[in-house]
Length: 388
Ligand SMILES: [Zn+2]
Image (tube, rainbow, N blue to C red):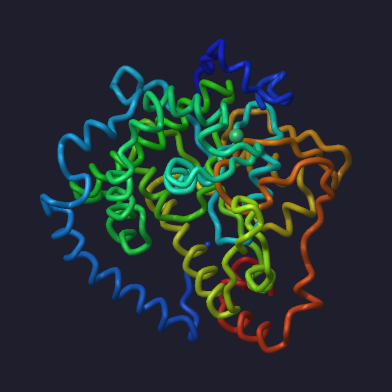
């Protein structure tokens, strides 16, 4: 048995969705890529010394005891060791279907989705952007209650300290340190302090929602590696991959950001840029398994071909608490309901009856030259994932 029975606070009932009526609410280096990956390695090597020097700098932001005290989180005492929140971390490269996967999982009983928690501090607490429920972060009743329960209110979170910790342990260039099975004590301590902030959020969200599984779709490997240093977290990673050509085509399109009232677009990338990200993000996630974290991988295309079967299989593979029942209207149709996903792709705002079918527009609309570049850059990993 993975989990104890969730503690249900009376106030949690106010935040349950109708689903909670029962409960709640990427071993290769391709010739064209070897240069960029080696360059990344050089950066990582160079960063080792500067990082150590920086960590020991007394004047570093948030390095004082007062900052540590203000960032202290709830529920990390030894007495709560049995109360380890089960967290399913969705990993993958951007535009690979992670937000859709999160939305689907959010329809399952016993699951609460939080969105990209790694961005909560900036986009939620600091910038007060829109929650997927349509309210600004500060006005969202769910996140207000999570902040109150986790920290005594979001105003008690020292954002400078969070930024310091994020720079120290949650960056791609820090992965050589955080991915080690036996990390240096100072790295482990900083990662644990950083992860404790997340764990407080997970615990509060679980208590408020009554869910048994908390979903964090922060996507990137460095965050998952930092979380793996927390011994009171029951962490599993679900890695979703998508054909690099489809990903590159998606990055080339204009997509408005609803969080800004449609005045800003999501960032756009060239095929070469998006494929570099695709390679590094997917490869980096393999390091999570090196840390002993259970890891399962699914393909976006397989998910949309057989939604229920894919989710059921992955739930079993990761030994998550049953039942893995996705309420479908038919084999390829689902009714999506509002969530409190705090940050991520605009897809998180989509609700209502949704037809699930893979986005294959790239096969017809992608330029020949762009397609050749992306295919050549990613060919070994495309083969590894079974796309060619
Ligand atoms: Zn909300």
